[in-house]
Image (cartoon, rainbow, N blue to C red; front, side, top):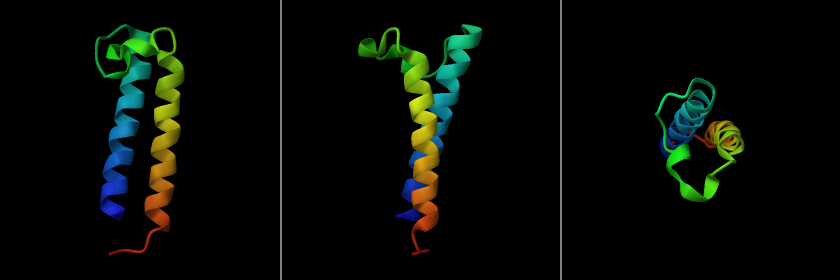
Length: 66
């Protein structure tokens, strides 16, 4: 379970970072800008993904090693 939480945290961190990179550099990478209902809220969604990633890392750290 700990490894799954770490994997999900890593994916959320990467997608959040790529979403911010897309917004500030106009590179066409990441999945956040491709989700239609997030139009105009891409920065907020990317920051939320980064916060979620740190929460998942904290949850993984609090789990005992299986």
